[in-house]
Amino acid sequence: LNQQSCQVFDAVVVGAGFSGLYMLHRLREAGYSVRVYEAADDVGGTWYWNRYPGARCDIESIYYNYTFSKEILDEWTWSSRYAEQPEILSYINFVADKLDLRRDIQFNTRITAARYNEESRNWEIRMEDGTLVAAEYFITALGCLSSSNIPKIKGLDSFKGEMYHTGRWPHKKVDFSGKRVGVIGTGSSGIQAIPVIAKEAGHLTVFQRTPQYSCPAQNHPLEAEEIRKTWENYDETKQQMRYSQHGVPYGPRMRSALEDSPEERERLYEKAWQEGGLFSLTYNYNDIAMVPESNETAASFIRSKIKQIVHDPEVAQKLMPTYYYATKRPIIDTNYFETYNRENVSLVDIKTAPIMEITPDGIKTTDNEYELDVLVFATGFDAMTGPLFKIDIRGKNDVSLKDKWADGAELKTYLGLATSGFPNMFMLTGPQSPSVLSNMMVSIEQHVDWVADCIDYLREHHLEAFEATEEAEAFWSHQCRAIADMSLLTKTDSWYMGANIDGKPRGFLAFAGGVGLYRLICDDIAARGYEGFASLLAHDNQDD
Ligand code: NA7
Figure 1 (cartoon, rainbow, N blue to C red):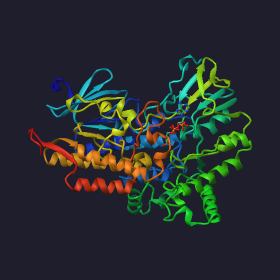
Figure 2 (cartoon, helix red, strand yellow):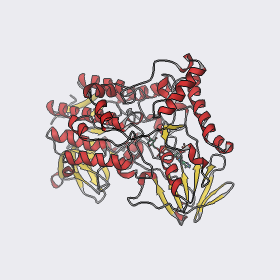
Figure 3 (cartoon, rainbow, N blue to C red):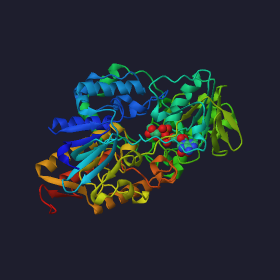
């Protein structure tokens, strides 16, 4: 590449969701030249694409904010406890307008390749139309759940009806009225969409591979006064979120589920069920995700609820999960189990009778055929690594990231932010960071701030070609696995484990030690002059 013939930026950021937008803001404020590239035609990332019926955030909206600006926080009001997708997208647009971010974002532009040039110490970044740009820092803000997974089922293309994936929902309203609709998948997306689609469809057939534990969201309108009060002690609330386990300003009670009597546990679980929310049930105790017997107390409580709610005992039985609770991403819902009491809804257990093929008219399982007009894939994402692998990222010696991580067990990052052999590349909310186990906003702000501070440091010290050492990433990756193994998280097939994608290598893809501990570690490493990273002095080929 002749870099004279292409634009050169200090930093290129890929993705204009929450992380890419804040990264742009931070770097621009510090005086760097930055360009963001975004495949969609507007800002929003996850909240741009996931427009399916019923799409909501399962973190309480009151805490699902940027917190870097008190002014922005004060100017926005949420209408309900769990905000719906259009409202979150409006919030993102509000921030993009307020900070005038769009002028440095190029939309409708998919980045297909990025290659590190060891001579120029720049990244060369290629767009789908072949255009090249260069940048000293290459920052991925791709989202953890943005590479949608449509399973390769025989006959998929032969289907005559309409087909949708929840994570690639069209921008028009999809009309289900009177139609025979099939939904494959009962994760967070399916469980949000199913009750809403059921109200409109002629008939809804849910194809369930694994039943889910789900608790009521108990969503309700929010008063502006409640939001104001929550943020009255802005600094304190922000600190509590930042040094917590999951990025919300509260945490589990320091007590084992086995220390309480069955009656007391039942009372607390019932109270949590009535309160609703993602953490209510698990935060009663601090060992639900760690100790099988404690886990079973919560799991059996939810199963008893399913039994109570669902009228048909056979259907209720099919809806009851048996794996450890909260080892797949916990789910909250509005009338999910109740939906199976509707006349126009049926449940098909595809674990017992798997899907054989998709035909022009619907779905054929090993024991039946279902005629459908609309097929909705709520089949999730190639999480964490999927979005990175969609770009041909090549570091030193032309090694591709995909090859480096070909064996999942060997997936190595340092802090989930960087990986050796890929100098000056930063991954926001990357694999082996705690992001997917947390309130994303807290993780995003922490990552962006750390990266922005790091770039300042590199510039001040005239350092280039900044990369994680192999020793540091080996250590970090080992820690990630060791922490996950202390919990029950690695005992279940989930997207955290890469287990939802055929052929994907298995390995735990996140740091399970919590956002607070993670922040302390990241800050400590920075304070030690970025321990575990190596760099070169500008215009020098000697190790610093
Ligand atoms: P998830 O949570 O990955 O759920 C996907 C669902 O689709 C889940 O029920 C899967 O069953 C099912 N699935 C996946 N592949 C297949 C195939 N091949 N056949 C049948 N069923 C399949 O994705 P979501 O979009 O719901 O949620 C993603 C995250 O977004 C969520 O965790 C929150 O963090 C927000 P399985 O359980 O794998 O047997």
